[in-house]
Image (cartoon, rainbow, N blue to C red; front, side, top):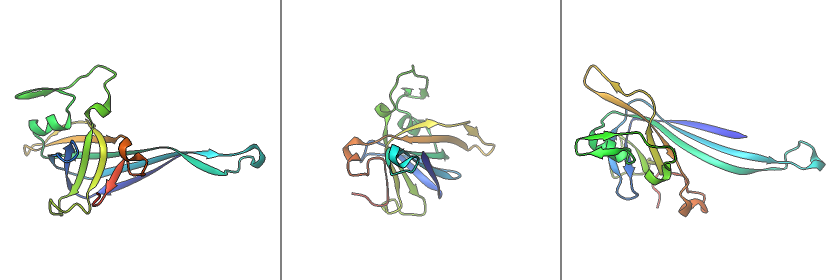
Length: 172
């Protein structure tokens, strides 16, 4: 059985990279959707028929969907470290078998109405991989939108404490 919760986040800016040295990827346009999924399995016994005695956690997932408004070649290189890069370009296309955790980093969603140093409403996926998720829009006003989805991976170093996937607010 899977339970899913979605939360819409206000206009924000996105940071991504190695913990403690995340780079700004720029502002977002439109909603940021955070999706949390928990899957559990029921525990039943022959003696109680189909009556559920308990359930056990089988796994959790978190994703963040957003569209980057201010993207450049430099922040594309940060967001997609698995891509082939050159001084003035970037290219994608990998062979099957590449691991997402090999190119994962901390993803931070920070509300634009908050000062850069105020982290009390920041949302963080502790190990995330970003990928393009849809059509890249080039608008008539010269702006462009890069739709992205970030998928969370468990941070084993924190998993035993129950906080190995995501964090909200100021966390130390």
